[in-house]
Every structure is written in C-alpha cells, then in structure tokens.
Length: 160
Image 1 (cartoon, rainbow, N blue to C red):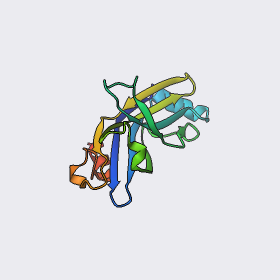
Image 2: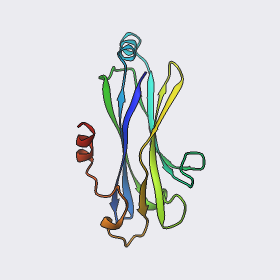
Image 3: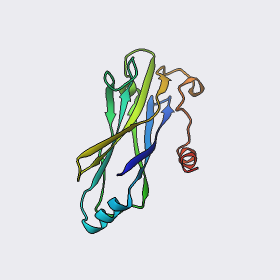
Image 4: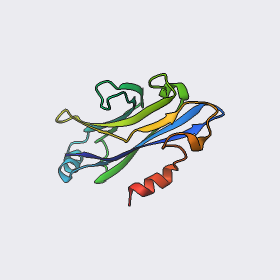
C-alpha cells in the first residue's frame, strides 16, 4: 500500500507585507504492485492533498480548525511515478489566514492526505506543530520554529 513519508511544514514570513509563504512537503512511496497496476491500467489511482490546521487544546484533530486547503490536489496514475515521489504544495497567504485562535500565539500544523481511488482508502499524516507570534513588529528571530528554513536545505535533510 502507498505510504506518506516525512511530511514537513515550512513558513517564510514577509514582515513588510504581512504575508507568509507556506510550503508543505511530503514523500509518497508506492509499492511495486501499485506501480504495476498504474502501468497496466492508466487512470487516476491516487490523489494527494494538503491543508493547514490550527491546533486547539487539547492537541488532536477533534477540536482543530482547518485554516487553509491547498488547491488543486495532485493526482497520480496517468503517468507512473518512481517508487518514491516528492510532492510540494506552495502558497502565499496573509498573516490573518493563520490566525487560528485570535490570541497572540498561533499553533499550526499541516496535514497531508493520500486517497487510493481503487480501494477508497484515505491515509493521513500530519507535520509537527509550529508556534508563531502574529505581531507585525516582531523580528523573525523571535517568531516560531518554522522561520528562515530554506526549502532546498530542508529537502536535502529529508533525503539523508
């Protein structure tokens, strides 16, 4: 069965424009059987999507609120991917889109979903939570753990 490996969330803040570039990365691994089926019967076999969530107390998705969904989702099957495939979702949002609970510190995470259209199975994996302070005058070094992460460096770390 296909699997989602090491989902990651990277945030790049622009304090002047009060925007954040949000990047969600993940590796999908396909089994040999799935790749063989995709070769034999071309079509849409898998769809992967990503969303940003605001974490509420206590941690867990039950009370969490979806803040943003990346569009469009990515589909696989018409062309057969390698055994593993890196997917990336990127968008630029205003800071208010990530204001998950209207206080000064926001706890956000990303969730990647993989749907198998043959079995209708749905696999979910979430990233770690990033806490960030949504004050326009706060320097980047004072903001949460996702600031200043270089996307290419992050990808290199995933591959090691």
